[in-house]
Length: 368
Image (tube, rainbow, N blue to C red; front, side, top):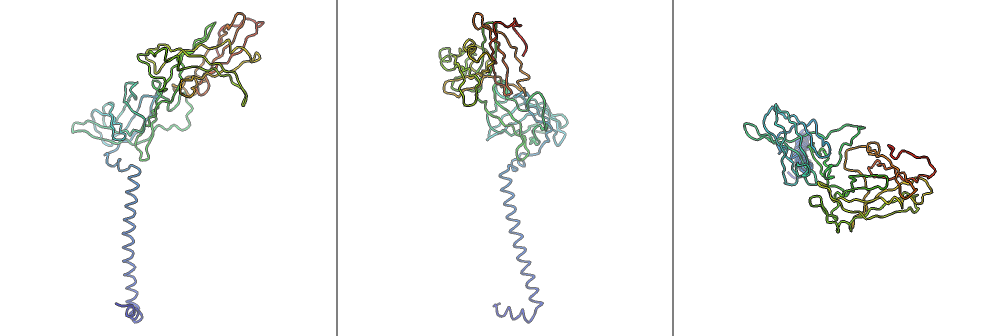
């Protein structure tokens, strides 16, 4: 039908024209609905692929997790309720980038799962490397193996004011195992390698000297000890300790650098060194006032590291890690009051103040 005839029929038969308009509108509506449905389906498929929901659906039925936390820095604790009352031995499956590691859990009874799994090779547990690991469940039932996806969230406590931290580092290696929830609701364990650290293992204050033993954790340039013993000549040339006095901003403050000596310590997390505090040099100057000294380990080829205690789960080291002060004879007739303490970040500070010779005798040891 040509255009002239079309418009002539429209003028002669308005009812036919109206019906024709309705039919064309309905046809266009059907086409538009099909296009919208097709574009919506494509957008949903793309969103599922980006978010990982396809993996959740493909992994089978899911179990609701009511508790998911890492205690003491290297022990995974998990409780889940399965969607059906199955029974049998169970395993936790840790998956990342095509790699799958398994760890035994308590047998599932009436659909209830409880798992306490050590993490890290040093703790004799699952050898997890850095990255994000999805956690699933495998149950060996009488009818065969059943796989479940663990859905839930990490422990949420709101405002936490307890004496310990929620995600402490592993005390054996310094690695961190942080429980998280993925964007699709799956249980996820975030593993990070240890940061370079100078961890104090012994602080010895006597009446005539002060020594500090520390180990280097996560410092690759120094090396790892074999059976707790480090090559003496090599280690002595690699590590020194700088005693830096606190000074005003922009000003200069005295500093004394002392070579550290390697020592044997079976079962150490890293190379262990001992340094003698240069108390005689630290006692000079200061105008008789107390002076604060910070300690820095300086491994060869690495940035300086603050000496302290960092591999613990204590929330406030200054209040929890208390150290006794002592009067130390730095030379004949000269006493120095040494008051060690740990900062809120776990760094060691030595507060030193000369004791006037005319002062009355004081107890050689007073709790700080």
